Image (cartoon, rainbow, N blue to C red):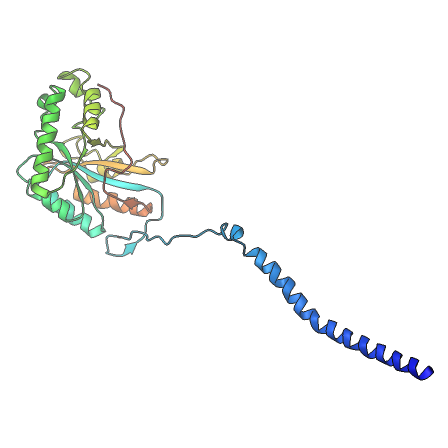
Length: 282
């Protein structure tokens, strides 16, 4: 009897040992399973959706006076604009713009340099409408007179350049009061009528003062053109492209370099550009 009991005790010990060994062998598997479960939870679709994907963007590079490329570093965008051209000075202005790798917007009229309109477009600047005759007593004599005039300059620009632009600038700006000498409240009517026709008008919030006298100095033009509201992100600078006086090319270089120093971006006016409007006074 003692022999049988001894055998049974040995058998139980052996079985227990085997079970213990088997259990020990299973522990790594159980640990890995728990870790996998934890990992799977962190990769559920709900969590994946919280990840942010950034699209790669390409900054527009520009050139300084030495031809070195730079990337604008501020939120300021400068729009250089020239009224009353083309003139004998247009190509020189375009040469300066080429040097700095930027474009400008030319609000043109009818004149003896109309062939330069194509150069404006082909060299990376924008062309826009100002007036066909630029004679205030005529264009501001009635709303219809102005509409007829703007349509004529539109057709001329289209013929010379192939550009069907709808961007305009009223002679004297939308805030001008000289128009009241010829027709009361005409500017209010013109703002409404031109917008109905699909035209988009732009005024300015900075100027170089080149129309303040026959010959304004370089220092004067630079001082005026670099005085801007620091809260404005879009600076539209009014200058003139005319045979006598108008923008001084040395001043233009210094104006560009000033805004480069501010880290500004330069752009041309398009239909999607922020619209700078004056208060309509007539």
